[in-house]
Amino acid sequence: MLVERGPNAEESLVALDAATGKRRWSVPRQGQSNAYAHGGVPFLVTGETLAKIDRRTGAVAWSTSLGDGPLSVRFEGDAILVSSEGKEARLDPANGVPIFEREPAHSEEKLLSDDLD
Image 1 (cartoon, rainbow, N blue to C red):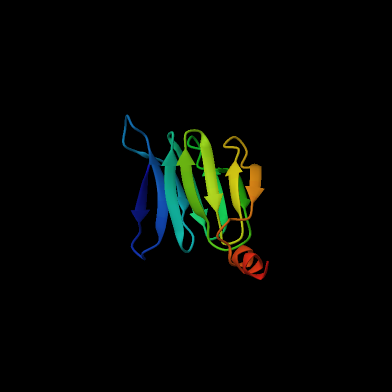
Image 2 (cartoon, rainbow, N blue to C red):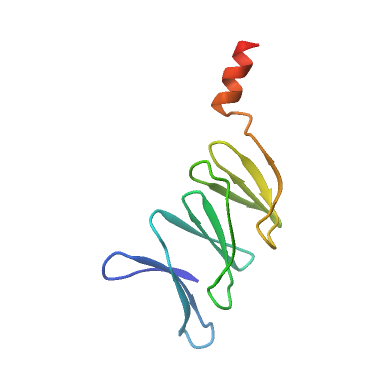
C-alpha cells in the first residue's frame, strides 16, 4: 500500500498487487487525513474519524468517531488506542467498537475541577 499524489495534489491510498504491480484499488484521502497500516491492515484518520479499510477491496470495513476534535491513533499489539481532546478509548480491531472510554486525565475540565477542590 502507498499514498499516491495526483496531478491536482489530491491524494489516494492505493493497494498494488504484489505479483504484477497493478493497482488493485484506490481510496481518496479527504482533507487532512493520515494513513496508517497495522498488521497489513490499512486505516485512515480524517479529523475525528478512524476508518478501517478492507485490504482486499478498499471498502470501509468500519469507522468510528469520538466526536471531540482530531484523533490521535496508536497501535499496541492488537489494540487500537485513540484519543481526542475530550476522550480516550481502546477500540476492538474487529469492529471499531470502544472496549472502554474515559476522559483523559489531562483534560482542561479535569484540571479546573481539581483546582476548585
